[in-house]
Amino acid sequence: MLLTGIIVLLIAGGAWYFLRDTSISNTNSLTVNSTNAPANLNINVIPQSEEYIFIFGVDPLTGLSGTQATIQGSGFIDGLQVFFGENEASNVTVTDGKSLSVTIPEGEGTVNIKIINPDGRSGILYDGFVYNAGA
Image (cartoon, rainbow, N blue to C red):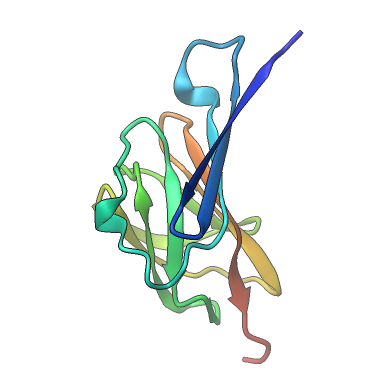
């Protein structure tokens, strides 16, 4: 039987939780799930993590494919992949462990943003981006 541990972290109106298969001792099975943090959240006061990926927000929150976006959070390392819904973003540049830039891929509607580090750790920002209708 697989057991899953759930831990919830509430900070300044945002909520982050992660699920971990407790039958596995490494962190590669770990996915951190986030909801949108408030726009005035100062990520510099939130402890940064090298073990987990947290996604605190994306700027802009809405837009079109081909637009440059900045994603803030923690645990970002070179070689990671970023997905808007099912589509992978291009031109991914990790600025530091808590900021990266991407070119938004094709898509529509409201989508989750998922980041996967090369070691398999991942984080999801639910309903993190809304594609604008039109060209």
